[in-house]
Amino acid sequence: MAKKLTITTELTVFESLQELPQSIQELMHKAQKARERAYAPYSRFKVGAAILLANGEVVTGNNQENAAFPSGLCAERVAAFYAGATYPGVAFQAIALTVRSLNHEVTTPTPPCGACRQSLAEYETNQKSSMSLYFMGETGNVVQANAIKDLLPLRFDSSYLK
Ligand code: THU
Image (cartoon, rainbow, N blue to C red; front, side, top):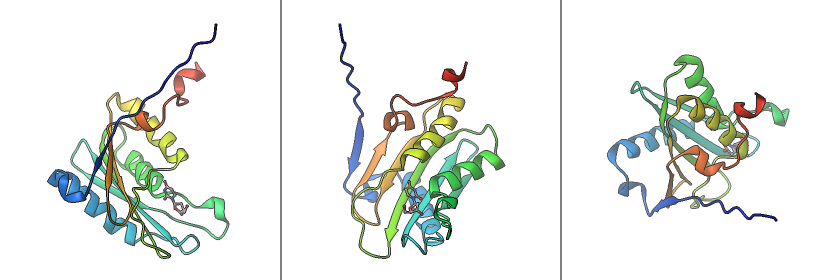
């Protein structure tokens, strides 16, 4: 007999960044600054990420594109891999993401791509605690997720390799 499984994800939508705690507003401002340093001449779509670590450090990243398109990397993974490389084993507490397109105003909160969710999930699984995620466009609403696993249910992780 087939069974149906339902997966639900709870997100919080804030009308503006000002509704969020000061510490998250500051994290988003760092993501916005990082976003402006993105190297995105091909897509003209700049993405910034800022990760607050459990040791109080904030690590930022932005998308780095390449003329050979698949060789570039998303902002989230630039930041996450830098954090992993610099502060191994230090938990990611929160991550703020923002985008700006040089073609049009992005008012829709823009979530991380699937590959970035998978990469962030690896850190979340290893640290045994959730990281919260805040994402927005250039302006407008901010979406909060309480964990990467909420954005990537049924994820592949190391338990399947055993
Ligand atoms: N991009 C990111 O940096 N993060 C995402 O989660 C989605 C997409 C970048 C990749 C590429 O440089 C540009 O945005 C357009 O896809």
